[in-house]
Image (cartoon, rainbow, N blue to C red; front, side):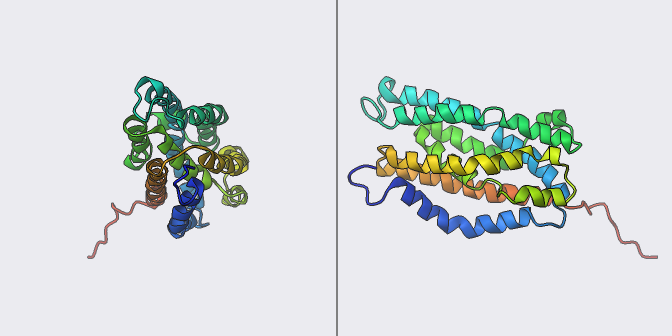
Length: 244
């Protein structure tokens, strides 16, 4: 935290995320309600594959931009003090997250779906907006914005009890690897990320970049869950009422 900042970066981010908590709770409650959970879960796996497959490439690009916006471009000073520790954190996180998109494909196969079809299908616009905004901010503002995205996704990982609820809806245990794995991993990841935010020498504009990224991600996550719910609803468009 810079000397002139009134509050720490993690405090600023937590305060803004608390304001979004009711909307997130409502979206997740609708997503994981018991009626229709089985069909929604298949849609969840496919949609989250679109999100998670972008995670490692986003972090890899952010690491490269850290090198470019530091001594090379001098955009943020002669040697951007944020980029060194940010890149170090991201390099470690990349290895922790690598291959998680393959977990989702395996879960889809265990559920009876076709992983190849998921890979061929164009992800919905909400997925592109979630990841695409991060690409833009990494390229044209500062790679630290990605921390807001990571904070929201990992801070809203599946709860430890969720896998059992999904299994009770008839989903086989072999299709629950991602849900169980992220329930175990992401709590520790989130704590490490918030600690990093307070270690980085962020000025107010960069704190704002992280917060803005996080709020955009919350909006996208709520929209994504609504999209999954709509896609899982029965299609009554062809039903007609005939009178004699």
